[in-house]
Image 1 (cartoon, rainbow over the protein chains, first blue to last red):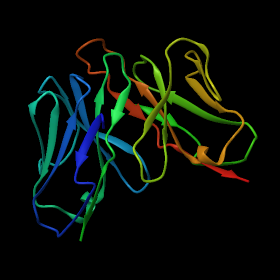
Image 2 (cartoon, rainbow over the protein chains, first blue to last red; image 1 turned 90 degrees about the vertical axis):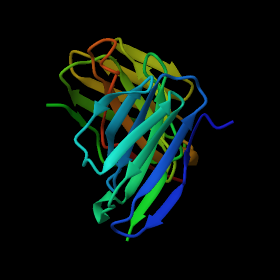
Image 3 (cartoon, rainbow over the protein chains, first blue to last red; image 1 turned 135 degrees about the horizontal axis):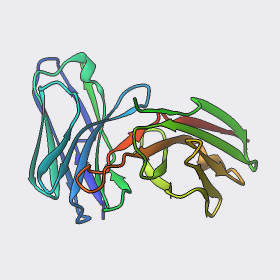
Length: 111
Length: 114
């Protein structure tokens, strides 16, 4: 069973479109994250939720909006996609003392 | 500011030993993690150090010196499957409520040659 699953795995879309990425974890963790990994492989945190509450909201454009309907799910909606949004987006969840478990990633290409 | 430095790329030979260094300057410290990331895949947890010294786990060991802001990951008996990026990450301090944010290095791409 996949511990952290995100969909879709690949997303190719046009500039200006709106898209969503979904993430679910079946580990019973309270904390979930969204990361962006650019072409230089640098992992940059975007958002963190703890028990459905937003804890960390790094400097990202407000076109990105996370939603956590329950503590097992953290979705990411992106409005008005731009070329610079092309990257791999990883969802992760965290055990109490720190190990983060990552989803397989969503490869977003904006054309 | 927060800064984590690792070499961008290293090359080693199958069967050999390689040491990947990581230095950090962070406002707080509550543990250091090493993750492995194969190309096109998700990062996976390798090791965790919070106290000074060496943690050994099979072919992989990780060392921490908090006074020097320094860690290394040691890989022994290298195998071709060890070709991957190795990410160093420091957990910020602040106790419960800080959400244990990880500050990530850019990763070291390790290339194993036959």
